Length: 319
Ligand code: SF4
Ligand code: ZN
Image 1 (cartoon, rainbow, N blue to C red):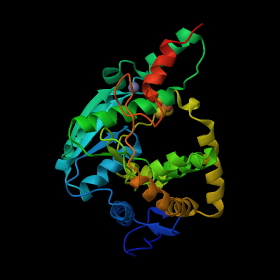
Image 2 (cartoon, rainbow, N blue to C red):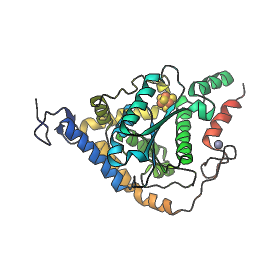
Image 3 (tube, rainbow, N blue to C red):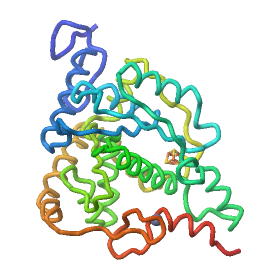
Image 4 (cartoon, rainbow, N blue to C red):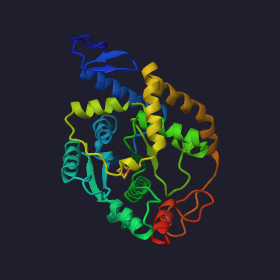
């Protein structure tokens, strides 16, 4: 068995493709922690006084976030929120109880809520209402689910005195999202994705992604090594995920066969290129308008927010 390329003492258990090193468990965990810290410091992502709400999906990335955040911020200032989407066969009681006990062991208060409880319709209910009303699917489950979860995290954090929302998005997620928005030419969205961008409404809580430079295969490996019983069942709506993201994921895999560190380099270059634009935008005294129906912030020039628009669309669809 090969020894770890870093410490030279312990047995290597993982090949870190972007560095070409074979690492033991300790050195991999330390390396991941240092890369999280590097992002946190570079962008002032976490300040000592911050009260942070962690969005827990029950997937591997959110466990890795839960595992590392208490090492860099006091657990008394961390809070977990798990949101049940209301998807038959996907939301499982074992996942909820495992999340609760993991948070308890880490000294993190954790609450479980559901999209239905907060926003009246579960994902399944939203979809069946849509099919009943128009006999077809105009709005995908993922669109509704994503907007609903973001809304719940923001409102929960704001109403419980938390000033940051942390999510477990990894490097692969971030690169895909950057690429999608570059292809769409959506500069405003690109600016919002950058870790230095500020929020333009007192009603919005800043979102942070401490795992944005950690590869998906690394979070999967850590979750496995730590024995996290993460959600492995695939969501039945996964097929509806935007095909552009799926295609981009395939393309990245091809590119990484030639250059295994392509994603990290891409992220760093786009971060750098966007920085002057982000700083300029941060100086704008924009205050986002509020939705005329629910009062939550919405995009400039809009009268109602995206969530109310989705609900209106489904409730008012004509045969
Ligand atoms: Fe929600 Fe789509 Fe993810 Fe399923 S695949 S949990 S519907 S975002
Ligand atoms: Zn609204």
